[in-house]
Image 1 (spheres, rainbow, N blue to C red):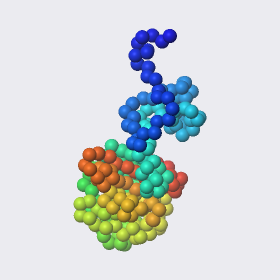
Image 2: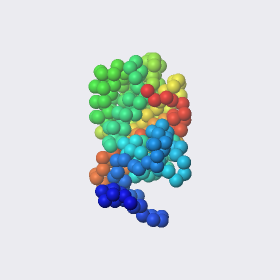
Image 3: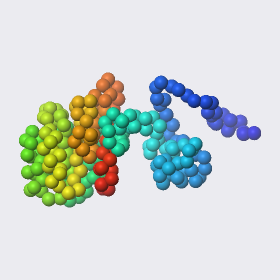
Image 4: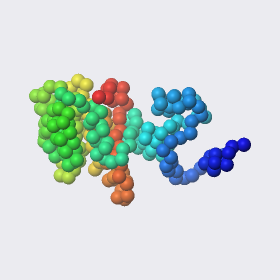
Length: 242
């Protein structure tokens, strides 16, 4: 028999199916493993190739059931390959930019964009990491394609469908046309204000990465702080991060 101490801390699972209408919140940081081999498999595959009947989860910073449900729901709503949720919109924006850009690369982005995005592009990308940041007037349809012609090494075209705070509208046809003239460029659009309800950027325009601050319309009640980055399948296949 297990010791008294072991019996105090060892929980017994609920028998049978649990059919809660609301997704439960899994607050655990760590998940139980079947074996050392199970843990090794999780570390090396992220849980994608675990055998049936075994847990896909190891540590909540890597993967969590509650977060998985939210990410899968967003992917289903918007289309695309997969979603990554972050603790804030700026975490999503900065992480996505850092994943695709390195010193010497060029990003073309609008003059008028969210204040936090401007700060990251100016003080982190440009001044600290040596990324060439080219700013354009996104209200002019030809601005991206003209900037692309005069700046070699363009890695990222970045835009906001509706800019924050000025509410400039990005001409999506001109934006994707500019991208089509470049080789190995990643298109990233912040769709926070419009959301996929008004404009689904992946199925309609083939944008590589769509970002939202979920703090705003995705949450809707000023009671969450979150962000998401959604990848198009072609982007996942074509590009290697970093």
